[in-house]
Image (cartoon, rainbow, N blue to C red):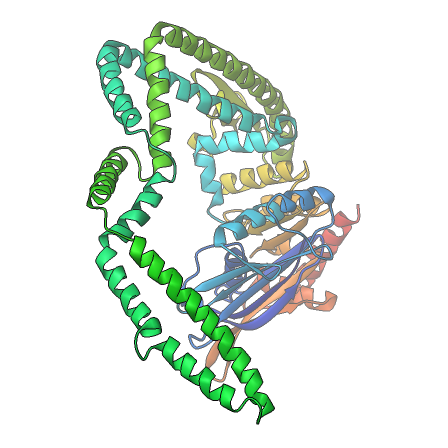
Length: 558
Protein backbone atom coordinates (compact mmCIF):
# COMPACT_ATOMS: atom_id res chain seq x y z
CA UNK A 1 0.00 0.00 0.00
CA UNK A 2 0.97 3.64 -0.44
CA UNK A 3 2.08 4.68 3.05
CA UNK A 4 2.97 8.32 2.46
CA UNK A 5 3.51 11.01 -0.14
CA UNK A 6 5.92 13.89 0.47
CA UNK A 7 5.64 16.89 -1.90
CA UNK A 8 7.88 19.97 -1.89
CA UNK A 9 7.97 23.09 -4.09
CA UNK A 10 5.47 21.69 -6.59
CA UNK A 11 2.94 24.02 -8.26
CA UNK A 12 0.79 25.49 -5.44
CA UNK A 13 2.28 23.25 -2.75
CA UNK A 14 5.13 24.63 -0.64
CA UNK A 15 5.75 21.42 1.35
CA UNK A 16 3.28 18.80 2.50
CA UNK A 17 3.30 15.15 3.57
CA UNK A 18 0.24 12.90 3.42
CA UNK A 19 0.13 9.77 5.57
CA UNK A 20 -2.34 7.44 3.90
CA UNK A 21 -4.15 4.60 5.63
CA UNK A 22 -5.71 1.29 4.65
CA UNK A 23 -9.23 1.29 3.27
CA UNK A 24 -10.84 4.24 1.50
CA UNK A 25 -8.82 7.46 1.50
CA UNK A 26 -10.82 10.46 0.28
CA UNK A 27 -9.34 13.74 -0.99
CA UNK A 28 -11.80 16.61 -1.33
CA UNK A 29 -11.71 20.37 -1.65
CA UNK A 30 -12.91 23.30 -3.69
CA UNK A 31 -12.31 23.33 -7.43
CA UNK A 32 -8.80 24.63 -8.04
CA UNK A 33 -7.64 23.92 -4.49
CA UNK A 34 -4.88 21.61 -5.72
CA UNK A 35 -6.32 18.09 -5.69
CA UNK A 36 -4.93 17.42 -9.15
CA UNK A 37 -1.46 18.40 -7.92
CA UNK A 38 -1.47 15.40 -5.56
CA UNK A 39 -2.25 13.08 -8.46
CA UNK A 40 0.35 14.89 -10.58
CA UNK A 41 2.95 14.40 -7.84
CA UNK A 42 2.23 10.66 -7.82
CA UNK A 43 2.56 10.53 -11.59
CA UNK A 44 5.95 12.26 -11.32
CA UNK A 45 7.15 9.70 -8.78
CA UNK A 46 6.14 7.04 -11.30
CA UNK A 47 8.33 8.45 -14.07
CA UNK A 48 5.95 10.74 -15.97
CA UNK A 49 7.51 13.57 -17.96
CA UNK A 50 8.79 16.33 -15.67
CA UNK A 51 8.61 19.99 -16.62
CA UNK A 52 10.25 23.02 -15.06
CA UNK A 53 6.73 24.53 -15.06
CA UNK A 54 6.00 22.26 -12.07
CA UNK A 55 8.43 24.28 -9.95
CA UNK A 56 6.76 26.59 -7.47
CA UNK A 57 10.04 28.42 -6.86
CA UNK A 58 12.36 28.20 -9.88
CA UNK A 59 15.39 28.78 -7.65
CA UNK A 60 14.69 25.61 -5.66
CA UNK A 61 14.22 22.00 -6.68
CA UNK A 62 10.86 20.27 -6.59
CA UNK A 63 10.78 16.98 -4.69
CA UNK A 64 8.30 14.11 -4.63
CA UNK A 65 8.72 10.98 -2.51
CA UNK A 66 6.28 8.08 -2.28
CA UNK A 67 6.77 5.33 0.32
CA UNK A 68 5.13 1.94 -0.24
CA UNK A 69 4.69 -0.85 2.31
CA UNK A 70 5.11 -4.30 0.74
CA UNK A 71 3.71 -7.17 2.75
CA UNK A 72 2.93 -9.97 0.30
CA UNK A 73 5.59 -12.21 -1.17
CA UNK A 74 4.12 -12.18 -4.69
CA UNK A 75 4.66 -8.43 -5.01
CA UNK A 76 8.17 -8.76 -3.60
CA UNK A 77 9.00 -11.41 -6.20
CA UNK A 78 7.70 -9.16 -8.99
CA UNK A 79 9.87 -6.31 -7.68
CA UNK A 80 12.94 -8.54 -7.42
CA UNK A 81 12.43 -9.50 -11.06
CA UNK A 82 13.08 -5.80 -11.76
CA UNK A 83 16.14 -5.81 -9.43
CA UNK A 84 14.28 -3.88 -6.73
CA UNK A 85 14.67 -5.26 -3.21
CA UNK A 86 12.27 -3.95 -0.51
CA UNK A 87 14.12 -2.84 2.62
CA UNK A 88 12.22 -3.44 5.86
CA UNK A 89 9.20 -4.14 3.62
CA UNK A 90 9.45 -0.65 2.10
CA UNK A 91 10.05 0.72 -1.38
CA UNK A 92 10.81 4.43 -1.61
CA UNK A 93 10.35 6.11 -5.00
CA UNK A 94 11.47 9.72 -5.35
CA UNK A 95 11.97 12.37 -8.00
CA UNK A 96 13.92 15.64 -7.86
CA UNK A 97 13.15 18.26 -10.50
CA UNK A 98 15.19 21.36 -11.35
CA UNK A 99 14.93 23.76 -14.28
CA UNK A 100 17.49 21.73 -16.22
CA UNK A 101 16.94 18.08 -15.27
CA UNK A 102 15.15 15.54 -13.11
CA UNK A 103 16.54 12.62 -11.11
CA UNK A 104 14.53 9.56 -10.15
CA UNK A 105 15.54 7.15 -7.40
CA UNK A 106 14.28 3.86 -5.97
CA UNK A 107 15.49 3.11 -2.44
CA UNK A 108 18.17 5.77 -2.90
CA UNK A 109 19.56 4.32 -6.14
CA UNK A 110 19.29 6.50 -9.24
CA UNK A 111 17.17 4.92 -11.99
CA UNK A 112 15.72 6.05 -15.35
CA UNK A 113 12.10 7.20 -15.58
CA UNK A 114 11.20 3.96 -17.41
CA UNK A 115 12.26 1.95 -14.34
CA UNK A 116 10.05 4.10 -12.10
CA UNK A 117 7.11 3.33 -14.37
CA UNK A 118 7.80 -0.43 -14.39
CA UNK A 119 7.89 -0.55 -10.60
CA UNK A 120 4.85 1.71 -10.33
CA UNK A 121 2.84 -0.64 -12.54
CA UNK A 122 3.36 -3.33 -9.89
CA UNK A 123 2.50 -1.16 -6.89
CA UNK A 124 -0.59 0.82 -7.88
CA UNK A 125 -3.18 1.48 -10.55
CA UNK A 126 -4.25 5.07 -11.29
CA UNK A 127 -7.61 5.64 -12.93
CA UNK A 128 -7.89 9.19 -14.27
CA UNK A 129 -10.91 11.08 -15.58
CA UNK A 130 -9.99 10.36 -19.20
CA UNK A 131 -9.14 6.67 -18.79
CA UNK A 132 -12.67 5.52 -19.56
CA UNK A 133 -12.03 6.71 -23.11
CA UNK A 134 -9.74 3.68 -23.51
CA UNK A 135 -12.96 1.63 -23.55
CA UNK A 136 -13.56 3.09 -27.00
CA UNK A 137 -10.53 1.10 -28.18
CA UNK A 138 -11.55 -2.53 -28.62
CA UNK A 139 -7.91 -3.66 -28.38
CA UNK A 140 -8.04 -2.49 -24.77
CA UNK A 141 -10.91 -4.90 -24.14
CA UNK A 142 -8.64 -7.84 -24.93
CA UNK A 143 -6.05 -6.46 -22.51
CA UNK A 144 -8.69 -6.34 -19.75
CA UNK A 145 -9.75 -9.92 -20.51
CA UNK A 146 -6.15 -11.16 -20.43
CA UNK A 147 -5.52 -9.27 -17.19
CA UNK A 148 -8.57 -10.96 -15.68
CA UNK A 149 -7.28 -14.39 -16.78
CA UNK A 150 -3.62 -13.72 -16.01
CA UNK A 151 -3.30 -16.54 -13.46
CA UNK A 152 -4.54 -19.12 -15.98
CA UNK A 153 -2.61 -17.57 -18.86
CA UNK A 154 0.69 -17.36 -16.98
CA UNK A 155 3.50 -17.09 -19.52
CA UNK A 156 1.37 -18.46 -22.37
CA UNK A 157 1.06 -15.07 -24.10
CA UNK A 158 4.84 -14.74 -24.08
CA UNK A 159 5.15 -18.22 -25.58
CA UNK A 160 2.62 -17.33 -28.29
CA UNK A 161 4.53 -14.14 -29.05
CA UNK A 162 7.88 -15.95 -29.27
CA UNK A 163 6.35 -18.71 -31.41
CA UNK A 164 4.78 -16.13 -33.72
CA UNK A 165 8.10 -14.33 -34.21
CA UNK A 166 9.82 -17.63 -35.06
CA UNK A 167 6.97 -18.50 -37.44
CA UNK A 168 7.25 -15.12 -39.22
CA UNK A 169 11.04 -15.39 -39.50
CA UNK A 170 10.75 -18.85 -41.08
CA UNK A 171 8.07 -17.63 -43.49
CA UNK A 172 10.35 -14.76 -44.50
CA UNK A 173 13.27 -17.15 -44.96
CA UNK A 174 11.09 -19.47 -47.06
CA UNK A 175 9.96 -16.57 -49.25
CA UNK A 176 13.55 -15.44 -49.73
CA UNK A 177 14.60 -19.02 -50.48
CA UNK A 178 11.99 -19.29 -53.20
CA UNK A 179 13.27 -16.08 -54.72
CA UNK A 180 16.86 -17.30 -54.39
CA UNK A 181 16.01 -20.52 -56.16
CA UNK A 182 15.58 -18.51 -59.33
CA UNK A 183 19.05 -16.92 -59.16
CA UNK A 184 21.00 -19.52 -57.18
CA UNK A 185 23.47 -20.27 -60.05
CA UNK A 186 24.46 -16.62 -60.18
CA UNK A 187 24.70 -16.58 -56.38
CA UNK A 188 27.01 -19.63 -56.38
CA UNK A 189 29.37 -17.94 -58.89
CA UNK A 190 29.58 -14.82 -56.71
CA UNK A 191 30.09 -16.87 -53.54
CA UNK A 192 32.86 -18.89 -55.22
CA UNK A 193 34.67 -15.69 -56.14
CA UNK A 194 34.42 -14.24 -52.62
CA UNK A 195 35.41 -17.52 -50.92
CA UNK A 196 38.44 -17.96 -53.20
CA UNK A 197 39.45 -14.35 -52.64
CA UNK A 198 39.50 -14.72 -48.85
CA UNK A 199 41.01 -18.20 -48.83
CA UNK A 200 43.81 -17.13 -51.21
CA UNK A 201 44.86 -14.48 -48.72
CA UNK A 202 45.58 -17.23 -46.12
CA UNK A 203 44.81 -14.87 -43.25
CA UNK A 204 45.93 -15.59 -39.71
CA UNK A 205 44.36 -13.94 -36.64
CA UNK A 206 46.65 -11.22 -35.23
CA UNK A 207 48.76 -11.15 -38.39
CA UNK A 208 47.73 -7.58 -39.23
CA UNK A 209 48.85 -6.25 -35.84
CA UNK A 210 52.28 -7.90 -36.18
CA UNK A 211 52.70 -6.54 -39.71
CA UNK A 212 51.69 -3.04 -38.66
CA UNK A 213 54.35 -3.10 -35.89
CA UNK A 214 56.98 -4.32 -38.37
CA UNK A 215 55.94 -1.72 -40.96
CA UNK A 216 56.21 1.03 -38.35
CA UNK A 217 59.76 -0.09 -37.44
CA UNK A 218 60.93 -0.37 -41.04
CA UNK A 219 59.41 2.92 -42.18
CA UNK A 220 61.16 4.71 -39.28
CA UNK A 221 64.51 2.83 -39.60
CA UNK A 222 66.69 5.89 -40.37
CA UNK A 223 65.15 7.92 -37.56
CA UNK A 224 65.62 5.17 -34.96
CA UNK A 225 69.25 4.48 -36.04
CA UNK A 226 70.08 8.16 -35.67
CA UNK A 227 68.63 8.20 -32.18
CA UNK A 228 70.48 5.00 -31.21
CA UNK A 229 73.73 6.52 -32.54
CA UNK A 230 73.35 9.69 -30.52
CA UNK A 231 72.58 7.63 -27.42
CA UNK A 232 75.70 5.50 -27.98
CA UNK A 233 77.89 8.59 -28.50
CA UNK A 234 76.53 10.17 -25.32
CA UNK A 235 77.45 7.11 -23.30
CA UNK A 236 80.62 5.70 -24.96
CA UNK A 237 82.08 8.65 -26.96
CA UNK A 238 84.91 10.96 -25.91
CA UNK A 239 83.84 12.89 -22.88
CA UNK A 240 80.71 10.72 -22.56
CA UNK A 241 79.20 9.06 -19.54
CA UNK A 242 81.77 6.20 -19.52
CA UNK A 243 84.73 8.65 -19.42
CA UNK A 244 83.05 10.67 -16.68
CA UNK A 245 82.44 7.63 -14.51
CA UNK A 246 86.03 6.36 -15.05
CA UNK A 247 87.40 9.75 -13.92
CA UNK A 248 85.16 9.72 -10.86
CA UNK A 249 86.28 6.20 -9.94
CA UNK A 250 89.94 7.26 -10.21
CA UNK A 251 89.39 10.24 -7.89
CA UNK A 252 87.59 8.16 -5.27
CA UNK A 253 90.34 5.51 -5.21
CA UNK A 254 92.87 8.21 -4.16
CA UNK A 255 90.85 8.98 -1.03
CA UNK A 256 89.54 5.49 -0.30
CA UNK A 257 91.93 5.08 2.63
CA UNK A 258 91.17 8.54 4.03
CA UNK A 259 87.33 8.66 4.12
CA UNK A 260 85.36 5.48 4.75
CA UNK A 261 82.34 6.80 2.78
CA UNK A 262 84.51 6.88 -0.35
CA UNK A 263 84.37 3.07 -0.51
CA UNK A 264 80.58 3.14 -0.52
CA UNK A 265 80.44 5.70 -3.31
CA UNK A 266 83.14 3.83 -5.24
CA UNK A 267 81.04 0.63 -5.05
CA UNK A 268 78.02 2.46 -6.42
CA UNK A 269 80.04 3.90 -9.32
CA UNK A 270 81.51 0.49 -10.13
CA UNK A 271 77.92 -0.86 -10.44
CA UNK A 272 76.97 2.05 -12.69
CA UNK A 273 80.12 1.53 -14.78
CA UNK A 274 79.21 -2.14 -15.24
CA UNK A 275 75.62 -1.30 -16.31
CA UNK A 276 76.81 1.36 -18.79
CA UNK A 277 79.43 -1.00 -20.23
CA UNK A 278 76.71 -3.63 -20.79
CA UNK A 279 74.47 -0.99 -22.36
CA UNK A 280 77.23 0.25 -24.71
CA UNK A 281 78.13 -3.29 -25.76
CA UNK A 282 74.54 -4.41 -26.45
CA UNK A 283 73.59 -1.19 -28.24
CA UNK A 284 76.73 -1.33 -30.41
CA UNK A 285 75.99 -4.97 -31.29
CA UNK A 286 72.34 -4.17 -32.13
CA UNK A 287 73.36 -1.26 -34.37
CA UNK A 288 76.02 -3.38 -36.13
CA UNK A 289 73.51 -6.15 -36.90
CA UNK A 290 70.67 -3.80 -37.88
CA UNK A 291 70.15 -3.03 -41.54
CA UNK A 292 67.24 -1.79 -43.64
CA UNK A 293 65.76 -4.57 -45.78
CA UNK A 294 64.02 -2.80 -48.66
CA UNK A 295 62.69 -6.08 -50.00
CA UNK A 296 61.07 -7.01 -46.68
CA UNK A 297 59.63 -3.50 -46.36
CA UNK A 298 58.00 -3.89 -49.78
CA UNK A 299 56.60 -7.32 -48.83
CA UNK A 300 55.08 -5.97 -45.60
CA UNK A 301 53.55 -3.01 -47.40
CA UNK A 302 51.99 -5.20 -50.11
CA UNK A 303 50.63 -7.67 -47.52
CA UNK A 304 49.10 -4.91 -45.41
CA UNK A 305 47.46 -3.36 -48.47
CA UNK A 306 45.92 -6.73 -49.33
CA UNK A 307 44.63 -7.23 -45.77
CA UNK A 308 43.20 -3.70 -45.64
CA UNK A 309 41.48 -4.21 -48.99
CA UNK A 310 39.76 -7.31 -47.60
CA UNK A 311 38.87 -5.41 -44.42
CA UNK A 312 37.14 -2.71 -46.46
CA UNK A 313 35.13 -5.38 -48.25
CA UNK A 314 34.33 -7.95 -45.57
CA UNK A 315 35.01 -6.62 -42.05
CA UNK A 316 37.29 -4.39 -40.01
CA UNK A 317 39.27 -7.22 -38.39
CA UNK A 318 40.76 -10.48 -39.64
CA UNK A 319 38.42 -12.32 -37.27
CA UNK A 320 35.38 -10.69 -38.90
CA UNK A 321 36.71 -11.50 -42.39
CA UNK A 322 37.08 -15.15 -41.40
CA UNK A 323 33.52 -15.12 -39.99
CA UNK A 324 32.27 -13.80 -43.32
CA UNK A 325 34.19 -16.59 -45.06
CA UNK A 326 32.42 -19.19 -42.90
CA UNK A 327 29.02 -17.60 -43.67
CA UNK A 328 29.69 -17.68 -47.42
CA UNK A 329 30.91 -21.26 -47.25
CA UNK A 330 27.74 -22.25 -45.40
CA UNK A 331 25.58 -20.32 -47.86
CA UNK A 332 27.32 -21.96 -50.81
CA UNK A 333 26.84 -25.37 -49.24
CA UNK A 334 23.16 -24.54 -48.75
CA UNK A 335 22.79 -23.53 -52.41
CA UNK A 336 24.62 -26.63 -53.59
CA UNK A 337 22.12 -28.74 -51.67
CA UNK A 338 19.26 -26.29 -52.23
CA UNK A 339 16.50 -28.80 -52.82
CA UNK A 340 17.25 -30.47 -49.50
CA UNK A 341 17.50 -27.07 -47.78
CA UNK A 342 14.16 -25.96 -49.23
CA UNK A 343 12.50 -29.20 -48.15
CA UNK A 344 13.88 -28.87 -44.62
CA UNK A 345 12.79 -25.23 -44.45
CA UNK A 346 9.25 -26.15 -45.46
CA UNK A 347 9.25 -28.78 -42.70
CA UNK A 348 10.39 -26.16 -40.19
CA UNK A 349 7.59 -23.83 -41.30
CA UNK A 350 5.06 -26.65 -40.88
CA UNK A 351 6.39 -27.45 -37.39
CA UNK A 352 6.34 -23.76 -36.40
CA UNK A 353 2.79 -23.42 -37.72
CA UNK A 354 1.67 -26.45 -35.72
CA UNK A 355 3.34 -25.18 -32.54
CA UNK A 356 1.82 -21.70 -32.96
CA UNK A 357 -1.59 -23.20 -33.69
CA UNK A 358 -1.51 -25.32 -30.54
CA UNK A 359 -0.37 -22.44 -28.33
CA UNK A 360 -2.92 -20.06 -29.87
CA UNK A 361 -5.72 -22.61 -29.43
CA UNK A 362 -4.76 -23.10 -25.79
CA UNK A 363 -4.77 -19.32 -25.22
CA UNK A 364 -8.09 -19.02 -27.04
CA UNK A 365 -9.70 -21.71 -24.85
CA UNK A 366 -8.55 -19.92 -21.69
CA UNK A 367 -9.91 -16.61 -23.00
CA UNK A 368 -13.31 -18.08 -23.89
CA UNK A 369 -13.73 -19.65 -20.45
CA UNK A 370 -12.52 -16.44 -18.77
CA UNK A 371 -14.85 -14.33 -20.94
CA UNK A 372 -17.88 -16.16 -19.51
CA UNK A 373 -16.72 -15.59 -15.92
CA UNK A 374 -15.78 -11.97 -16.62
CA UNK A 375 -19.17 -11.30 -18.21
CA UNK A 376 -20.96 -12.68 -15.14
CA UNK A 377 -18.80 -10.74 -12.68
CA UNK A 378 -19.13 -7.55 -14.76
CA UNK A 379 -22.92 -7.90 -14.82
CA UNK A 380 -22.93 -8.25 -11.02
CA UNK A 381 -20.57 -5.30 -10.57
CA UNK A 382 -22.60 -3.13 -12.94
CA UNK A 383 -25.79 -4.05 -11.13
CA UNK A 384 -24.16 -2.80 -7.93
CA UNK A 385 -23.42 0.46 -9.77
CA UNK A 386 -27.11 1.04 -10.61
CA UNK A 387 -27.07 -0.47 -14.10
CA UNK A 388 -30.54 -1.99 -13.98
CA UNK A 389 -31.67 -4.66 -16.46
CA UNK A 390 -28.34 -4.40 -18.24
CA UNK A 391 -26.70 -7.26 -20.12
CA UNK A 392 -22.93 -7.39 -20.58
CA UNK A 393 -20.88 -9.86 -22.58
CA UNK A 394 -17.41 -10.35 -24.05
CA UNK A 395 -17.74 -11.07 -27.76
CA UNK A 396 -14.82 -13.11 -29.10
CA UNK A 397 -14.16 -13.81 -32.78
CA UNK A 398 -11.57 -16.15 -34.23
CA UNK A 399 -9.27 -14.60 -36.81
CA UNK A 400 -8.34 -16.39 -40.02
CA UNK A 401 -4.67 -15.60 -39.45
CA UNK A 402 -2.09 -15.65 -36.67
CA UNK A 403 -1.04 -12.56 -34.71
CA UNK A 404 1.51 -11.96 -31.99
CA UNK A 405 -1.45 -12.05 -29.57
CA UNK A 406 -2.96 -15.31 -30.80
CA UNK A 407 -5.98 -15.82 -33.06
CA UNK A 408 -8.62 -13.92 -31.07
CA UNK A 409 -10.27 -10.58 -31.58
CA UNK A 410 -12.78 -9.36 -29.05
CA UNK A 411 -14.84 -6.51 -27.70
CA UNK A 412 -17.26 -5.71 -24.90
CA UNK A 413 -20.91 -5.63 -25.90
CA UNK A 414 -23.78 -4.30 -23.83
CA UNK A 415 -27.53 -3.89 -23.79
CA UNK A 416 -29.03 -1.27 -21.47
CA UNK A 417 -32.67 -1.77 -22.57
CA UNK A 418 -34.37 -5.18 -22.23
CA UNK A 419 -35.31 -6.76 -25.52
CA UNK A 420 -32.67 -4.96 -27.56
CA UNK A 421 -29.67 -6.80 -29.05
CA UNK A 422 -26.21 -6.58 -27.53
CA UNK A 423 -24.20 -3.89 -29.28
CA UNK A 424 -20.57 -2.72 -29.05
CA UNK A 425 -19.93 -0.79 -25.87
CA UNK A 426 -18.41 2.13 -27.76
CA UNK A 427 -21.63 2.62 -29.75
CA UNK A 428 -24.15 3.10 -26.96
CA UNK A 429 -22.54 4.03 -23.62
CA UNK A 430 -22.48 7.65 -22.47
CA UNK A 431 -19.53 9.31 -20.72
CA UNK A 432 -21.04 8.82 -17.28
CA UNK A 433 -21.82 5.19 -18.06
CA UNK A 434 -18.29 4.63 -19.37
CA UNK A 435 -16.93 5.96 -16.09
CA UNK A 436 -18.99 3.50 -14.09
CA UNK A 437 -18.22 0.61 -16.46
CA UNK A 438 -14.51 1.33 -16.00
CA UNK A 439 -15.02 1.31 -12.22
CA UNK A 440 -16.73 -2.07 -12.56
CA UNK A 441 -13.81 -3.39 -14.63
CA UNK A 442 -11.27 -2.09 -12.14
CA UNK A 443 -13.11 -3.60 -9.21
CA UNK A 444 -13.54 -6.97 -10.93
CA UNK A 445 -9.84 -7.05 -11.82
CA UNK A 446 -8.92 -5.98 -8.30
CA UNK A 447 -11.01 -8.78 -6.82
CA UNK A 448 -8.52 -11.21 -8.30
CA UNK A 449 -5.68 -9.82 -6.21
CA UNK A 450 -2.64 -8.23 -7.81
CA UNK A 451 -2.17 -4.50 -7.33
CA UNK A 452 -2.83 -3.44 -3.75
CA UNK A 453 -3.49 0.28 -4.27
CA UNK A 454 -6.17 1.71 -6.59
CA UNK A 455 -6.39 5.45 -7.22
CA UNK A 456 -9.52 7.02 -8.70
CA UNK A 457 -9.49 10.62 -9.89
CA UNK A 458 -13.05 11.98 -9.91
CA UNK A 459 -14.74 8.68 -10.70
CA UNK A 460 -17.90 10.64 -9.93
CA UNK A 461 -17.81 12.58 -13.22
CA UNK A 462 -21.28 12.78 -14.76
CA UNK A 463 -23.16 10.97 -11.97
CA UNK A 464 -25.40 12.00 -9.07
CA UNK A 465 -28.20 10.80 -6.82
CA UNK A 466 -28.76 7.05 -6.45
CA UNK A 467 -25.98 6.28 -8.92
CA UNK A 468 -23.53 8.31 -6.83
CA UNK A 469 -24.58 6.32 -3.78
CA UNK A 470 -24.05 3.05 -5.69
CA UNK A 471 -20.55 4.18 -6.71
CA UNK A 472 -19.69 5.09 -3.13
CA UNK A 473 -20.82 1.68 -1.89
CA UNK A 474 -18.79 -0.09 -4.58
CA UNK A 475 -15.68 1.92 -3.67
CA UNK A 476 -16.20 1.03 -0.01
CA UNK A 477 -16.55 -2.65 -0.87
CA UNK A 478 -13.34 -2.61 -2.92
CA UNK A 479 -11.58 -0.80 -0.06
CA UNK A 480 -12.25 -3.79 2.19
CA UNK A 481 -9.57 -5.73 0.30
CA UNK A 482 -7.49 -2.94 -1.23
CA UNK A 483 -6.22 0.48 -0.40
CA UNK A 484 -8.33 2.96 -2.38
CA UNK A 485 -7.43 6.63 -2.84
CA UNK A 486 -10.21 8.70 -4.38
CA UNK A 487 -10.40 12.36 -5.40
CA UNK A 488 -14.06 13.39 -5.40
CA UNK A 489 -16.57 16.26 -5.43
CA UNK A 490 -19.53 14.13 -4.36
CA UNK A 491 -20.56 14.01 -0.67
CA UNK A 492 -22.03 10.51 -1.10
CA UNK A 493 -18.56 9.18 -1.91
CA UNK A 494 -16.73 11.33 0.64
CA UNK A 495 -19.10 10.14 3.38
CA UNK A 496 -17.75 6.58 2.93
CA UNK A 497 -14.20 7.65 3.80
CA UNK A 498 -12.12 5.64 6.22
CA UNK A 499 -9.66 8.55 6.10
CA UNK A 500 -10.61 11.98 4.77
CA UNK A 501 -8.15 14.66 3.60
CA UNK A 502 -9.16 18.25 2.87
CA UNK A 503 -7.16 20.24 0.35
CA UNK A 504 -7.49 23.99 0.80
CA UNK A 505 -6.04 26.98 -1.01
CA UNK A 506 -4.90 29.96 1.09
CA UNK A 507 -2.95 33.17 0.54
CA UNK A 508 0.18 33.56 2.68
CA UNK A 509 2.53 36.53 2.35
CA UNK A 510 0.99 37.41 -0.99
CA UNK A 511 1.40 33.90 -2.40
CA UNK A 512 -1.27 31.26 -3.02
CA UNK A 513 -0.50 27.97 -1.26
CA UNK A 514 -2.38 24.68 -1.23
CA UNK A 515 -2.44 22.86 2.10
CA UNK A 516 -3.51 19.31 2.99
CA UNK A 517 -5.23 18.47 6.23
CA UNK A 518 -6.36 15.12 7.60
CA UNK A 519 -9.88 15.57 8.98
CA UNK A 520 -10.83 14.24 12.39
CA UNK A 521 -14.25 12.72 12.97
CA UNK A 522 -15.80 16.03 14.06
CA UNK A 523 -14.34 17.83 11.04
CA UNK A 524 -15.79 15.56 8.36
CA UNK A 525 -19.38 16.79 8.83
CA UNK A 526 -18.63 20.47 7.97
CA UNK A 527 -16.74 19.32 4.83
CA UNK A 528 -19.64 17.08 3.79
CA UNK A 529 -21.97 20.01 4.43
CA UNK A 530 -19.82 22.23 2.18
CA UNK A 531 -19.96 19.59 -0.55
CA UNK A 532 -23.74 19.36 -0.11
CA UNK A 533 -24.63 23.02 0.26
CA UNK A 534 -21.83 25.02 -1.28
CA UNK A 535 -21.30 28.50 0.17
CA UNK A 536 -24.56 28.56 2.20
CA UNK A 537 -24.29 26.06 5.06
CA UNK A 538 -27.61 25.93 6.88
CA UNK A 539 -28.63 23.85 9.88
CA UNK A 540 -30.59 21.63 7.52
CA UNK A 541 -27.52 21.05 5.37
CA UNK A 542 -25.47 20.19 8.48
CA UNK A 543 -28.13 17.74 9.59
CA UNK A 544 -28.20 16.21 6.12
CA UNK A 545 -24.41 15.81 6.28
CA UNK A 546 -24.62 14.08 9.66
CA UNK A 547 -27.29 11.73 8.35
CA UNK A 548 -25.27 10.96 5.23
CA UNK A 549 -22.18 10.14 7.30
CA UNK A 550 -24.17 7.95 9.67
CA UNK A 551 -25.74 6.04 6.78
CA UNK A 552 -22.27 5.46 5.36
CA UNK A 553 -21.00 4.18 8.72
CA UNK A 554 -24.02 1.89 8.99
CA UNK A 555 -23.34 0.50 5.50
CA UNK A 556 -19.68 -0.15 6.27
CA UNK A 557 -20.51 -1.91 9.51
CA UNK A 558 -22.67 -4.52 7.78
